[in-house]
Length: 80
Image (cartoon, rainbow, N blue to C red; front, side, top):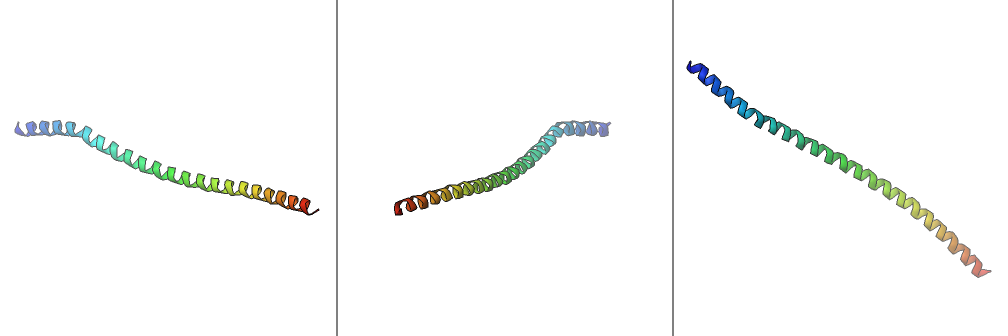
């Protein structure tokens, strides 16, 4: 009789602690997911910045080459 009383109390404690352990497990999983998303976002940001730098340098090269052409043409026109 005493043993069944203790077992029932242990079961009651287990049932009350079960949601707490589930919540802590969910919290750990969420923290892990947040860290993973942060790593992915950092990687995407670096790739976008690299692409932006490449595109910017490409357009700057085009603009500067056209400007140099125009300047050379204007210098040739002044000489003639």
